Amino acid sequence: MLLEVANLTVAYDKAMIINDLSMAVDQGELVSLVGPNGAGKTTLLRAITGLVAWEKMTLRGTAGGDVTLKGKITFDGRSIEKAPAHEIVRLGLVHCPERRRPFRELSVRENLLAGAYLHPDKAQVQADLEMVYQLFPVLAKRGRQVSGTMSGGEQQMLAVGRALMSRPKLLCIDEPSTGLAPLMRQEVFNKIQQIRQMGITILLVEQEVATVFKMATRNYVLSSGKIIAQGKGEDLLQDEVIRKTYLGL
Image 1: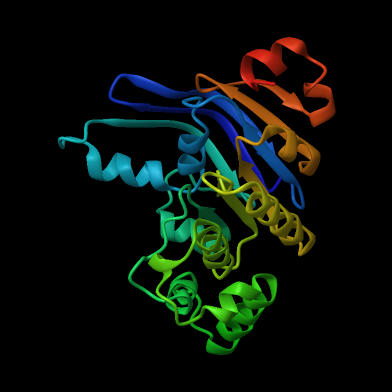
Image 2: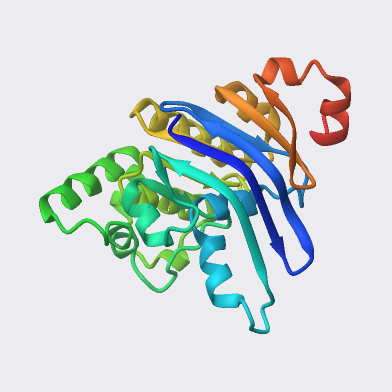
């Protein structure tokens, strides 16, 4: 397995967000994490990519409260649950956050180059930039545009492009369709499928369950910080309780 999570627990003060959770993602898969709001999906991605470990170091004993992270996270054969976030990126595990979060005062090109800050080879960075421009032609056209003036859909493409500049082996994408019009949502999902075809493994958090079930190799359903079901989309949709209670279908 490329990514293995074993008995992971995350708590903020006394609030349990992730509770003894185990899951895995194999090389080449597109795996989805679905479930109701507040299920712990975003916290799980943040734990996997080192952001919760960073919070544990910086928030303990401050007004931010105490953070607990227990369990085992293994990526590409290496234990990473205590690794700093920048080292996890260097290993090839990259997080594309929810709500896009561009550096709003920087241009499109500057945002993309920020994603390559761990890769000093200028020739390789330029090749990666051309790859992103080929995947997202609108970014090539808007290279000098200040990212904060772009539409939501264009900013989402920029966020994914910036993550690709980090040269991921596994790309974690959090809620890419949020706030987008239907046509733009479908365009973003099409691009995600193209990225997988490029050989990049994907872990996708998404609310558009019907769409991601058609895309994903496997799916995990989260509720209250626990995985309550897993499997192929067509199998999960056969379970009426899962469909109505946890997926809202």
